[in-house]
Image (cartoon, rainbow, N blue to C red; front, side, top):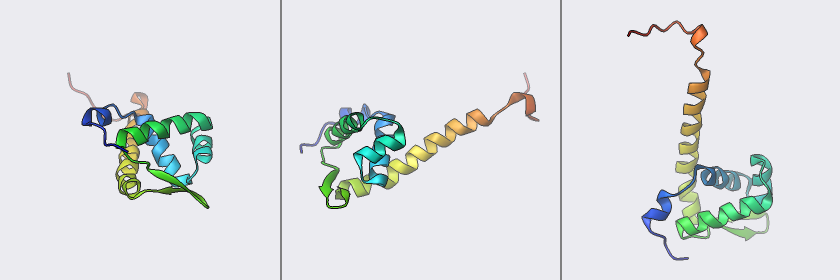
Length: 107
């Protein structure tokens, strides 16, 4: 596959990262869809977008499920870590409850 310009990667949707991580961990489009509460065609479409964005197949079919390419193996740790960090920031903001906070705010 031909490499896409940097602008293509700049449009990478966070949901595509979630799909990538789920497929990598389950080695299945169907199981990734189940994990994310998405249909199999939706996950397949997201995988097609990822393939276009990265200019790589990312996964090929194997006897026991999807097999990641070398680029896919390289991307996974960074994308997984990034996703966990983003999710943590969301949890941090949800965890704050002003009625129970002992923090003082100065005006």
